[in-house]
Length: 364
Ligand SMILES: [Zn+2]
Image (tube, rainbow, N blue to C red; front, side):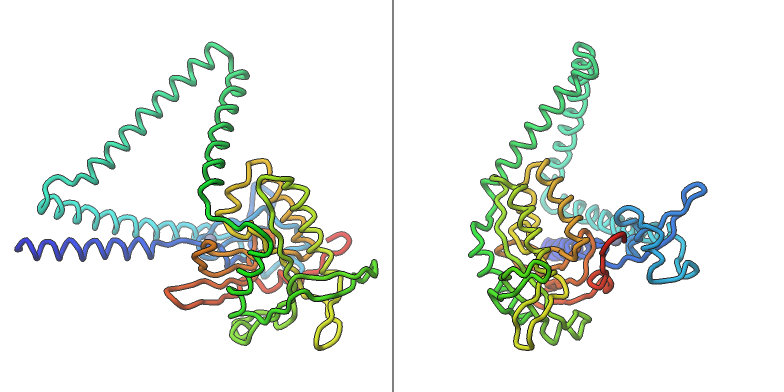
C-alpha cells in the first residue's frame, strides 16, 4: 500500500466506525406490552419493552392489567428479548472494537505512536489511581470517625460536588428565559404538525368559573394518518424557574393544566372538552431538567406521576432550544406519540393508544 492509499483506507475505517457508532442500538422503550412476571409463588403484571426487554416502571395492579384483555392473553415476561438485545449490542461493540483496532494499527503505521491512545490509557490509569486513593481516604475516615459519622461527612461532600456541578450547568446552559419566549418557540416549531389556536376562552364545568387556556391544538392530517387522535387537546405553557419557589410554581402549573381537562372551550364547532391536556414548560427540555437540584427533581417526578392520573402529560422536546429534533407526548413515563427528526425529515410514531382514553375516577 502506498502512503496515500493507507490514508484513504484510514479515512474509510474512520467513517465505518462513525457509522457503526451512529447505529449502535439504543432504546426509547416506546413499545411496551403488559407481561406476567413470576416472583417466587406470586405473579406481577409489568410493562416489558418489546425491543430491549427491560421492565418499564413498577408493577401494575391486576385489575388494570386485565382491564383490556383476558388473563389467557397476557404472555409471560420474556427474558429472551433482553438476551437478544444484549447480544445485538455486544455484536456492535465487538465490531466497533475490531475496527478501532484496525484503525489504530494503520494509524501507528502511518504516523507512529497514536497520541490519542496514549492519552486514553493515561486517563484510565489516573482513574484507577483516584479510585484507590478515594477508597483509602474513606477507610481512614471510617476508622477515625465511625461509620455513621463517615456517612454524614461523605454525603455532605457529595452534595457539595452536585451543587457545584449544577451551579456550573446553570451558568452555561442556553435556556429559556420567560413564558413569552416559550410560547413563541412553541408556535414556530409546532405549527408544522398542529393547527394551533391561542388564548382560548372556556368554562370550568364543576365550578362554572371562566378560564383561558394558552393553546388548543388539533393534529394535521399527516399525524392523524399515523394514528394521532383527531380530537382537540390543550397545552398550557409555563416558565418554571429552577432557582425560585420551584415547588409552589410547578405544582400550581400542573394543577392549572389538570383543571382544563374538566373545562370546555369555545371553538368553531361549539363548546369542546379537550381530549387531554399537556404542560409545556422549560422542563420539557432534558437539559433544563438537569438544572433542578436533587430535591426539586424528586418532587417534580412525583408531581408528574399524580398529574398522569388526571390525564395531564408533558410535551417533551427532543434536542435543545436551538437544535429541535422532535417531540414526545409523555404521560408519566409512558409515551403516547412521538416525532423524531431523522436526517432532515420527521418520523411520527404512536406508541400507546389507550393512555389518552383511560378514565381515572374514584378507585381505579
Ligand atoms: Zn426498551
